[in-house]
Image (cartoon, rainbow, N blue to C red; front, side, top):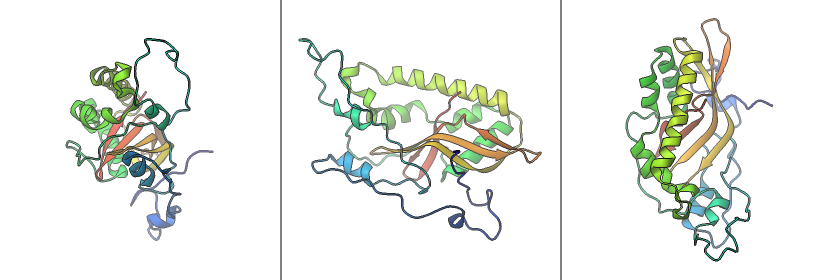
Length: 237
């Protein structure tokens, strides 16, 4: 089944229908952190998506044996549990995204459509997270950033940014110059909370073109929210 389209204010709602009426607004089931949990565990368990219709989608992976286990020279990995949980334990911090930011997922999606209308690669790039934000806010919480992996922030950013450029290129080839009106958003993966930020993965922007035909635009595949402000975390082809 296709995910429900979450409509923003003024997007796909009748004049007599509020956003609250458009979908169930009852609280999403909470996640309880087990006893002995870290501060990050407790913070992440308590977080909820901005809309209860968005599913929760952890990055946690099933525990598996490493080929290094049993080797006499296997590296020490005191944070190995981060792979199972999907995040590293970090200190909560007061962080902010660099401008431009947007106050909601819907206003960010509308900005993506505006950039496509102007067929502007630079405008789409402006909407995504920058290297400083990636290095200082996001990378430290990712399991792959553990010292034992040997992966640097620069290596990860290079891969990440290349995917973004591919996604932007595909978006402009497919929808550049088209006038599209936002209907709402779908989340085909869902809400992935971290200690200091929240990812919304599998984003699909639902819009209508000038002929009232509905189109689904999946290139801005991950949104990020930090302190109530939103950006595109990743474009994808």
